[in-house]
Image (cartoon, rainbow, N blue to C red; front, side, top):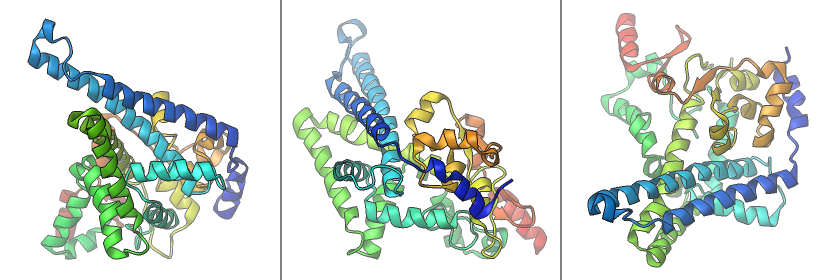
Length: 348
């Protein structure tokens, strides 16, 4: 079985974009997204009031609007994968029109190109490395580190990795983590975070002025809230799953991290479409220049990629991933907070 640079080189034939295919897929995704937004706006807030009553009619109208907003939000996840691949240099490289469209998507989802590229490139180079892996990812500490942390440090660590933090990714991961915090660290380098915030607010305001305050939420904010929440969990689960491995700085190796610290998330074809095949995450981490639509092809053709650590979007699998909090080098696995406290107490 190939490994190291040899394995990366073997994946290079799939790191070739089919530009017409990229544009076809992008146009379809944009059509679905804009159609879903139009359906959100066109759906009345009150449906069938004469039959079910005004309050039930209002609830029905809001429910239908939410369904169309969810469709727009899930499609926005797919559009973000185009943007993600664009910044990796996998699609639309050198295209002026592509740059405009991709940057518009990035600003729409509150992920300015400077901070996303900087932190995400770092993440790829240091995935599951014990020192430094927290940049561009969720932080991970060892049992020993946990035992030496203050109560305030533990509280902050728990807060960052809390499921509600992921569910509220619109505010926590993107508004704060991708826009405000980077700008405060380096205003000159990451001013596009403020551009994203201002542009997003202007877009929501435009929806409100054109279609009313209710549609400003359902069409302007809710799809982005859904997309960022889904994205926040996907990013967590693809590097925090049963069987994932973490290595020290001297033992760490790029292809090992790709194959054993990045999961394959099994989904049905519809969810693979919405998520832009990001579930093939071990393939993506092996070679980030493979366009998302060629990831299944690369996995099918390379024996080394066909036995990954797998996760799913089922409730039980989600619970398993969320229960993993702290790395224990002695056990070679992630443990819960309770297990970490017991291990630290036993060590003392």
